[in-house]
Amino acid sequence: QSVLTQPPSVSAAPGQKVTISCSGSSSNIGNNYVSWYQQLPGTAPKLLIYENNKRPSGIPDRFSGSKSGTSATLGITGLQTGDEADYYCGTWDSSLSAYVVFGGGTKLTVL
Amino acid sequence: EVQLVESGGGLVKPGGSLRLSCAASGFTFSSYSMNWVRQAPGKGLEWVSSISSSSSYIYYADSVKGRFTISRDNAKNSLYLQMNSLRAEDTAVYYCAREPYSGSPPDYWGQGTLVTVSS
Image (cartoon, rainbow over all chains, first blue to last red; front, side, top):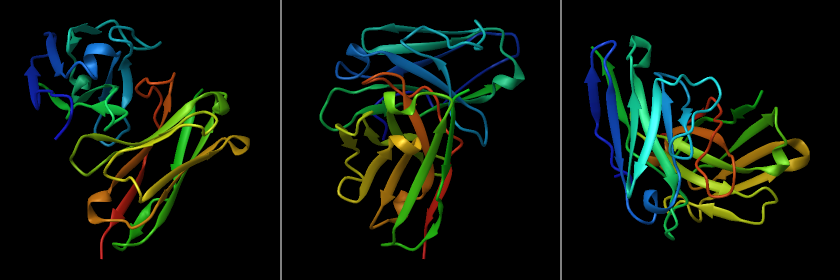
């Protein structure tokens, strides 16, 4: 059971917009930056968003991130079939039981 | 270009040991904390361990504490994970991942190495 809560799956048609939520607590999301990762089938996770809403070089502006309180959201606009992947949120946790925590992952299906 | 290349995975019997390595290049390895993160088949990401740039601070997930040991050799730009008393539930792809700054989730990840614990 993951510390951060994500919906198991989301779906939308090509060209549409989708959002993926990530819920935590004051010991993690509430007081720390959130990152988002994309994991295509059979590959390693790739950083999409860091520090809540910043995109690394090379990540298109179709991907966006936001945070409010103890929740974060990843938004993807102009969906493409190549966006089909698993998406994970991650953040630092200041409790004694963990260091970095991740969400359980959300499978995005582009219909 | 940042590159992280893991090696050392394989099939091991329950109770056995394995040592994973991660070769880093394309950045000043000695300036960054590093992490091991694993992913069981069909499951999500699980943080395993973290080590600071000078090895002064080391952290472990409760699930591996007392069995796994993280270490690094800055002269060789290498990160290691010594895994002892392996269990079936340790079966996973193990990723080496760079921590951009202290207390931050990883930015760059290696391609992973598969560890299978089975009799």
